[in-house]
Amino acid sequence: MSLSPVPTPRAPAARWEPSDGWDRALDDVVSGRRPVTLHAQPIVNLAAADVAGYELLSRFGEGTPDQWFAAARHRGRGPELDLAVLRSALTLRATLPANRFLTVNVEPEALSVLDLPRLLAEAGVRDLAGLVVELTEHRPMPEDDAALACLARLRDAGALVAMDDAGTGYAGLAHLMRLRPDLVKVDRDLVAGVDADPARRRLLELLGDLCGQMDAWLLAEGVETAAENDVVLALGIPLAQGWHYARPAPPWPELDEGVRDGLLRAAARIELAEHVASVMRALDADPSAPFVVLDGHGRPRAVRWDAAGLPAQSPAMTMAASTPLEEALRRALTRPVQDRWAPFLVTDGQGTPRGFVEVADLALRASSRDRSAPMRTV
Image: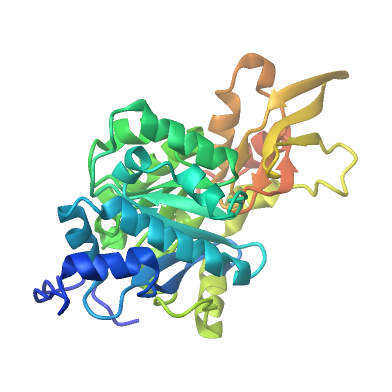
């Protein structure tokens, strides 16, 4: 693509108001009289060069989504509009291709104002597996316990939690540590031009380390050039989205074959042999594989393994296949002593175990790399 690493700022949308007034227009959307149209933008699993999930983006006919949500917040109706979009997304979920997830934006204040789990249950929606509730950082997270309790109940129903625009919004790292999200989305402002800015690259690397310690997935938003993609891939960031891969479209867009081939070539250049994928073993074909204890939604909770001839159980530590070897080894060896040599699991974007890694294999592979070779530039 021939896009500039730092895109030209877009002019703000002209002021627009519905002919029958905002209150009437919002009433129509909240009641279902005015349909919410949803477009989907693919979220890419970089190691597999395939679609892992989609972010759903709402459209209301005339006017921009920003105008609608700003008008709703101004009238104290932001949570109502969030709920209307969420209900539309859950209706659409029935047509979602297998093994993919959905992310839907929700304003943080909606967590305190609305009892989302109860309202969804009343609408007949109880299983939220495959749904990612994405909290935007453009608004502050409420300080009361009701918001965190709402998130806990959404997670109990199978949903995951994402923090949007990490590094640019309210509270920053303190917010991240409080939420402990399952998915952390890095804002476009930190991704733009990362191929030419060592400081941005180091910041992405540090965010990746932090997310790894929390067993969260890092997602780079707004990737618009092949050079940005190469850096994101080289850093071991497992997920990305942006115009370099696909633009929003009616559900459910796939990756263009040319885009997919380009991702596979980039992965070959960057040598994924330097990542966890190179030492992963199959769970169903290796006699030394640990027994994986799953929670009620099929996500790993613990592993039972052989500790020097004695049975042991350790909390499950999970990583993406694209995690760099050094980062994986550092995480493994900073666990409590009794868990330090427990095998860890390699999971996909849904949190489903796809393989396991023995720490001894990881240490041998990391130590055998040729450190005298010159540093690769991307």
